Length: 393
Image (tube, rainbow, N blue to C red):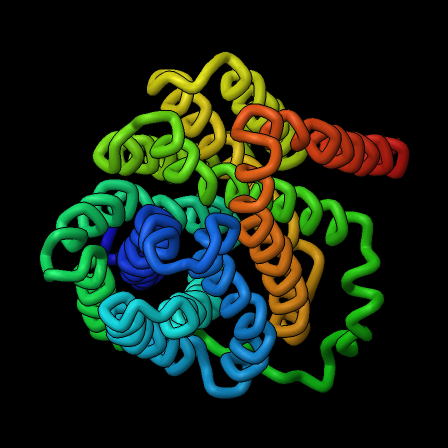
């Protein structure tokens, strides 16, 4: 298989995804706990995680536009450099007991993420039509390594230095250096300008397509709900008398749920269609809500977070696959940038609101409030399916 250059490039991107996602999962595991130690009030405990998503929202469109001119490899290596700086600054912020400096570090992790989110699109760009859904899934499957490595590095780095969690951020910097080395081997062809091809459409026409809107809303729903619950989980578990080791293990199970399905999500999309897979994602996220209402014991947290991860995978891979059919090669920078910026803006709001919601209404009520959001996303997918069926007839 690896004799094929297309497959080798997808493997490189999947490996880089594993390292990038390790950094992201590490922040999700210990960011709120580190923030709680130095925040002036409990509702600001998740500010470092919110800062990460702010960094992503700010970096996504500039990253997309710059890479459309400079190329994927240059942008991806620059993103990993942001990750290296993020780890060093975050560690310094914890040692200095400065929440703003810690947030600056996690914001740079977000900038890293702003570039790394295009790994999945790069995989689609090096693949032919038949391999494309699987290529996207395989790159996201790199997160399986992150499911094991991210929380483990968070736990390992926690007591590594005199100031708790500072060592975790130094390990984040190290993984980013390794990722930069791997990304030097990435070769993604640039889109060829052609006077004979269709004109580049205004961005409002691209975004206004029904398939684009549903792809964006579906992926944003999966991402926003996943981030809200994942951000709140370590804090909720500690509040309900579970230790850091239990919280880290639940995050591991959750991230495995996010990425293990990637080995077959592409095949399911090819077999049953992208909209059917997205509907199943909605059902799984609803399952997360109902399981979270069953109690606050360890099995309830673990089961709910596994369902949360699988539901995210089906919606996110499905939404990405649906999106790739809505733009031309010349339009991809703008189309992908608007999509990912919107998704991460919603991730920012979810991560920022997680601490306040958890503080004010508690774990179970917070999850119950997600059901209307899921209902709207389900209706949007059903509407697009009905529209396509009517067009076909």
